[in-house]
Length: 392
View 1 (cartoon, rainbow, N blue to C red):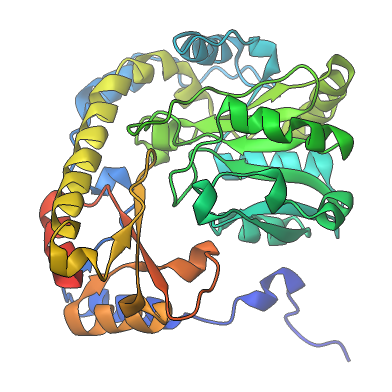
View 2 (view 1 turned 45 degrees about the vertical axis):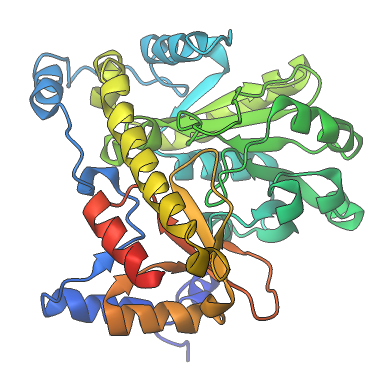
């Protein structure tokens, strides 16, 4: 007799709530306030949005007429072309494929490059989403570990030839979440021959690329010689994760690019998920880019300034360090006091009602008697300052 209610083995890793989730659920159920220093949803971070203007855009746009195109509406892709042109990069709208989210973009790309059971290279430290997306596609992840002494940037020394030999592609997040490191042109050229030798496409997640504020500069990387794929979207760029519009930007050898488009068209045509209304008002949404980004950047700078000032005090600087980021929405604190990380973060949540991420969930290397915690710089300043003071 067959077992009843059998499910996919994809979910074998998911066995109920972890302890953080249980505590947070209990707080919410009993309306117990806690200080959330992990906040990553800008629409819940007290920013002002042009709500009425966006409503007007939808009200005056054609929401009904549907022109199915596997790549997304051409006019929408031309607006994205203009976005890159404003940054000094000339792209062809025919090299763009629109998706409903960056997660969906990855699912398309994993289908394009991988078969079930294949392996891909992902960054550590890095955002844990890649592991979940890979499980959903039936592929394995192999981490490459960037190093603090290299500013957490990807270098050839981080890549094991055995892993390069067996993996189908390599992922990079630039700016990185959570370290803020940037893969610039010089960094890319230093690994280009390695990628070419192993015939590895590189996918670059550039969703935080509009948030550069340190000594780094950022340029979208495209290349005619090797496959380079960029993923971006409105979620971070406009602080509008609910608008559900992202894209894939292809570059590489002509024959490879043409074959990739052919296969991506088939994948996209199968799902056709990106909705028409958000495509039709993209031009209007882009008009609010500076208005929204300026608020986010001011929040980031204010929180960073507070952190720098308070970490500079003698009693604090000796026990807690921070590699202040050059980009992105996050910062990482490290200290012997944070070791072991999960126990520290749980104690902070239980005793002081302060929620932070332990560094281990981002794949930071384990170091004896040294722990890391990750804070969101989007956190409303009053909450951020109170939480940081309690931590310090």
